[in-house]
Image 1 (cartoon, rainbow, N blue to C red):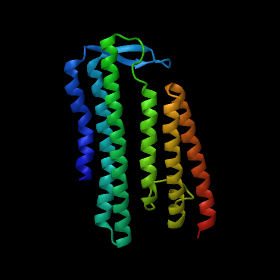
Image 2: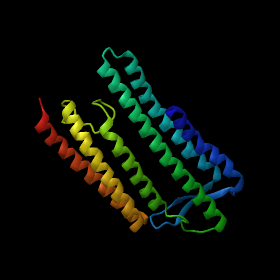
Image 3: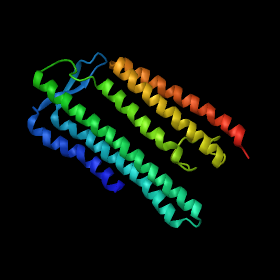
Image 4: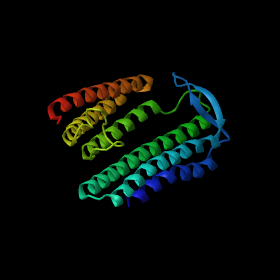
Length: 228
């Protein structure tokens, strides 16, 4: 079921783009400067580039998912099998949430291109920075909720030399990192609504960096507490 949802979300952007092509003029706004002014017009068919990137991203995720599926089948111990299945399920959630985010952004890009071309406006018609910030915040909340469910591995979760020391340091680090990520997501959503524009993106990046630093420092303290 999760695989079907992922592939449906992967194909949907291309289907939507194909459907709206009939209503778009041949030339549409394709890029904006920091002031939100159009600085490049291009072919409406350039809107198929983003769906192609979404497909490549899904193929990347699916390669990791197949790795953990095979690992669970080859596992000699029940603990190893359950860990592989757990990581595979978390990867599905990450892939689906990320692809859903890009679906929303794709629809926003299409609407912005269409409305800008129809009105012949030289400024952006939708605050895409605000939308991106809100969707990124929601993504962080979702991912932060699932991060503590990962088992120690080299591909998924908050991985540092310290968090990888043993199962206890891993669990503590990813539990703290998940909570921190959810808090950061909420802060990003709020500031995106309040600030908007390019400034909200800069604030978002600052929150993400601060979150990463705090979580990194915590993994060291978890290592000192739970190291064998």
